[in-house]
Length: 466
Image 1 (cartoon, one colour):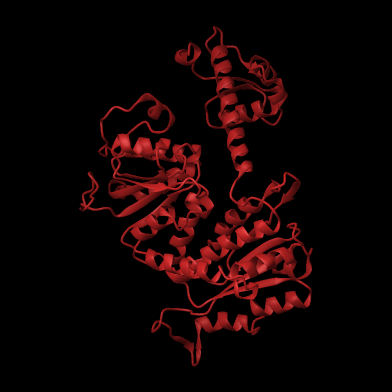
Image 2 (cartoon, helix red, strand yellow):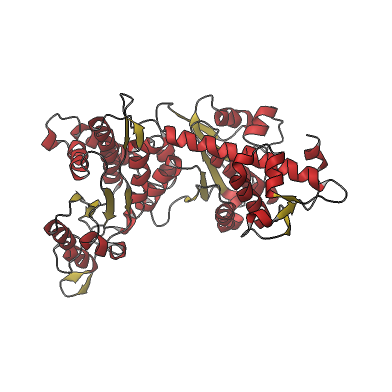
């Protein structure tokens, strides 16, 4: 069966708009950057934040192609606020473009908590019977792909989360899975020197004294691996950054990860790495093949563009291998991971290597790599801020409905919200509302919080009597 967009003049999908956050975006973004062909069957864009400007930019870039865009919504629970917000913004864009949407009525719980308008061109990747799964089923989305409840977002690249977007871009996902399978097989040996993930985890342990005392700087020397360090940042830091170990002891474990692309971005911090504070170890990702066979050419007799990068490895220009030698000579630790070329198989192997290394390191330091209480606490805190904002809005609305309008000081708003202990947060809420023309400053400025008075430009009767 061929699936076609209902409103596209082309008669087929031309683009993908993937909505997700964290692991639901970083893995697919990394793989798209590393492996997507120059002219993929479907071009992909990502909404990976709840920034209105960023969402507007992605939608604007689609232009008329919005009518032929397949929307993929990735959320394990179906209740992640950032993903929900992205979906609602995209649905609004579809409505404003006059594109076809189903007219069926949804149960109020789904309307209020996840989606206001059905998306006839949507695909859901989520846990079975989640809020998103139920929404997609009721609204009649094109397809629903399940996620297992034990798969976290940061370890989901080899599930439908990563494989579906990759396949739609023309990436060979069977080869990705084959590479991951080969790596897993290599990592099952109990002979440490033959186990790549164990060697990597032990190197981290040794370099950081088993307590995360040094940062992990990741420098991939291939443009297509630009996003690898960003992907590893979440995989490693969310997995290993834990307050308590498995015995309930407070240990505050973790490894800080940062990096970018070598050799270009190496210049941003090589001076400090070489001579500054010794609070890091470096991982070089080395790729041997420059271009596909038959596509290279010589810039000058006997020298290709890739030879220059290779020369850096050989200390001709004091980069990569030269840097590595210089660092080692100054007691600066480094790790080199070498792959033959960037292919679906090698990328699948890299993903599996680092996922397994994280698990092994976690066992070495006696923590749980697969939960994220800090992330859940952050989501709860964000919800509390939004709840406070609603109370602030109600107080300002009540004052603005009076004749004459009653401008309030920040202290008065806090008092009427019964939240004097949250006065700083109330100030920030008011400042944000004022910057977006949702509240008006009667006098004073946000630079002098106690001096300002604020009110709403319009009285909302529905809000007043809600």
